Structure formats: structure tokens, C-alpha cells
Amino acid sequence: MTDSRERYGAISRLLHWATALLVTLQLTSVYMSRWQPGNWLSQYVQPWHMTIGVTVLALVVVRLLWLCRQMRHRPPHQSKAALLGHVFLYVLLLMVPLSGLLQGYGVQLFGHLVTKGLDTPLAGAAHALHGLFAYVLTALVVGHVFMVLFHHLIRRDGTLKRMVGKANT
Image (tube, rainbow, N blue to C red; front, side, top):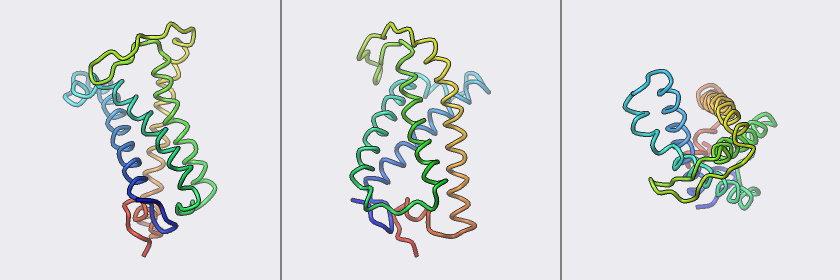
């Protein structure tokens, strides 16, 4: 369940892959709705945009708390660039949903209004930043996937294996 120097534990992997799935679904549906309005994916996912965003925010908070608990046990980062990349990913994984929440809309989870929208002077800025943050997050996710593939296919150093639960062999 917990992390070790050789691999990430089941909880870290579950939090990682759940976040990855939801962020991919969220970003893909938004881009698809712009490139091909009315497509089936966007029509299915867009009504759940806020629920998915709030879920991502909750997962990231849990991930950060879990990371703090597991810090000494985790596999080491390959480089300072990898560490910096992960820090930026976490920052954007927090900023995208937070900027969405600060836009002043009521929070709906699973189709039910949980809180009314906040009347805030930050709503306009949050709206502008939400899209910008999403673009930057997309670039970071693409870079993250590229580096994972680079380490797996070129360096063959076991980076991907540690995130799927197999010890580096």
C-alpha cells in the first residue's frame, strides 16, 4: 500500500492514475468541443465538468497529503528538472480547478447544487486564467508523458515500472 525506494505503493498509484484519467477526460472533452462542436465525448462529459474538476482538486489535495507522508519512502527523482516538472504539475493541478471555482458559478456536484456562486471581483480574472492554466497544464502533461516514454523506451531505467507497481529490474 505504501511507497518504497523501488516503487510507488498502491495508494500513490491509485491517486496518480485516477487524477491522470480525470484530467485527460476533462482536457480532451474541452478541446474536442472547440475542434468539433457537438461531438459525443464533449456532450457526455461537459455536463460533468465541474464535478470532475472538484474531484480532481480533492484528489490532488489528498495526493499532496499522501506525498508528505511518504516523502522519505518514495523512489528518488531522476533529476532536479523532474522534481521541478512535478512541482509545476501539482501547482497547475491545483490552480486549474481553483480558478474554475473562483469564476462565480454555483458549485454543482453530480447534478446537485452544493453552494451558490460567490460574487467576487476575481471572477473575470479567474475566468481568463482558467483557460490559460488549462493550456499550460496540457503542455506539462504532454511533457510528462513524453519524458515517461523517453525514460521507458530510450533510457530503460524503470521509471514507468515504478508507477505501475513493479520494482525496477
